[in-house]
Image (cartoon, rainbow, N blue to C red; front, side, top):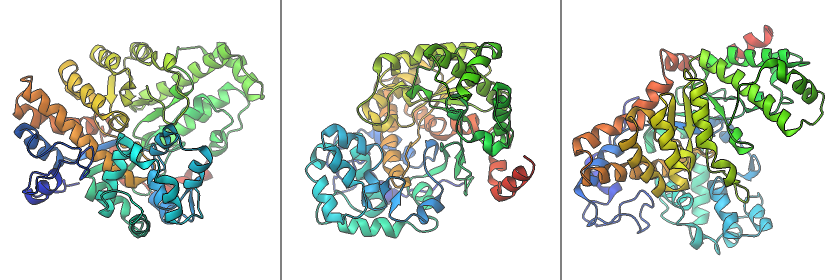
Length: 484
């Protein structure tokens, strides 16, 4: 698509370089804690203008199809379909960490309360939550979409009205392309999103079920009754046959339950473990790991045959109250072993393995097939992410990184994250220029590979994008259901 043009007047309004002297947005538009007009360097201004006019390819989201949002009733999953949905992903974790009682937390996200009743639950905590990047993201998104600078008792009713008014056919394109300047998004939903707009929402094949949850209905959809490991291999083959050519990549999020230290394990060794598992018996920890290791490599080898990159979660956990850092610290070392074991596989390591991002720089510098993805990282810790990007540019070849993925379920929260990422990228490049590591011209050139060119080359090889844009899921599903 053509890049939306941001005219000079709009750029002055967005960045605060006009006569009003307002703060530069990014971490918080209009919230008084951005870079001031006086303190912003000329270097930053030039780079930020280029970054604002440069389209993103978004490499990671969790959104449903637009039709799901359009047809939603009172609830979207386990969250109310009202203004509180805008605070339901990631921010809800900060809400718990701040100390809100669990019952109040659940009540806030339930249906049946009017905006003021929800505000009364929310108000005592908002002053302490609005400055985290999760909170900043909400504030920026509210301003971008609804013209609301900050939440208060007087405007939550107005926000509720505007929240519902936005949700109409075409609002995904409006939010993502017109407002956020995003060309396309890559979506991770279990196990595959049959996208209604495959030019806008492209899909990963999420393979955790192949590796961990053999009871999941993969075999049923494939029309294969699973009795033994060979049957399960055929199930995996079926999914790759049908969805592999229509996938952008495969996604593995096993790091939430174990380290990513997958070791090649033979079929013969794990046959009895699979039989034990499929019969409903519990595996010993060592047996479980070996079976998962075998199935991981079976799926990764299939992906590699089809030239599909392998996206892997690393580092920080979503949620609140559980994160075994002693295990997560092993992710970078295990990443090295994966890259060495399968040099033909393109491994894309997510989230900069925060807080172990220095170690991931070493992984990316050493292995040609190690690629870093900064999705989610900008709103986990924007300052660490800026630091990572600066160090990456001076440490690793520039074509081995993609710099943005919103990682959100609500599409309405992507604009804020995109703004935070744009400011972070601009600050990282401006500091490198001002510290005499690179020239301004070089910094301006870098914006295209960082924001879209690297992602396009990594995922849109051959005619993949053109094929995705021609998909008719009704025809495909009718064909493969009649031929199972």
